[in-house]
Image (cartoon, one colour):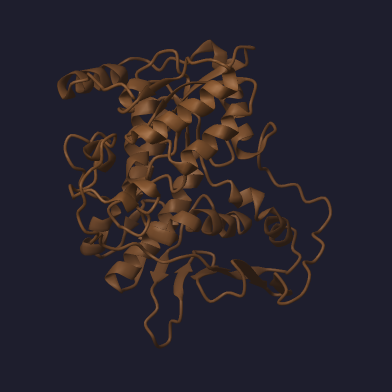
Length: 403
């Protein structure tokens, strides 16, 4: 059974303020010494255990502790870690602060539901931890900018978890950036739609589940088993739906191919049932990205053709196209491990991850309000629409409004 937190609200706030006030300290092991990178893993549902399994495959990484509000998730995760190291040393926790507060842990993996990502990430960075966080990295636009600021202030390495941006779509990147279809002005992304209200019927909270801690900053509501079994994504209090789930992969792929991954759209127009058939993002350079309506999950149209070809085999990509991507070896997780040692920015640095998530969040706001939005990607402000601007952030349930 996972141990219970003894940290008080007053004590925790004193600790957070104290950490924020002192100069940033980087453990010497992060600069390339031969010692292992010590990790704690937070959020041990199916996806979290999958990511942790990836880290367990690296000899220069040692997982010391796991955390989850569901006791069975913790038990399964501990079994994985102890089995890997042939020991019984892995500690289990219910409260993530018992991991972020440990001085012997250098990095954390966060695989919780989306509504917890920002708060845990920022607390981890305040305590000197590097962060690997599953996508979507944020629940709101403002959370993303706060995470970027924290990473820069505390000198932290932060990698988002969108492995498909390069792993699945690198052929598209090489084709588009290599000029295989000429000048590209349109892309289509086919992923699920926005999230909505949660009306699940109340059920009794079972033993071994800390439901209040699962909710955390989200509004209080009764327990339902679907939410702790990965079924939280359709509900707005916890996620942005398919728009931010697969959207962070596929919108991320489109933006990276088009070299728009460090900016954002200037207009977002939802479908109106008449002239506008799909949600449409327009960028300052005239490029448009559509949500839906394509002939594959990710599609591009240029002045000299389109990809992928409909009903035909993929074209051979242009030769000698070199695009900066993962550092080190071992995919997205290997990229993070390498950057923890070298202090480089990873492929899915928090600024890039934030920009992709923002793209998806703005689409959701346009869907929810059923009207066009104008966006300033430099100031990160919705122009001339105070009601829409209120959706750039959410109120956090006490005592979790820490960022």
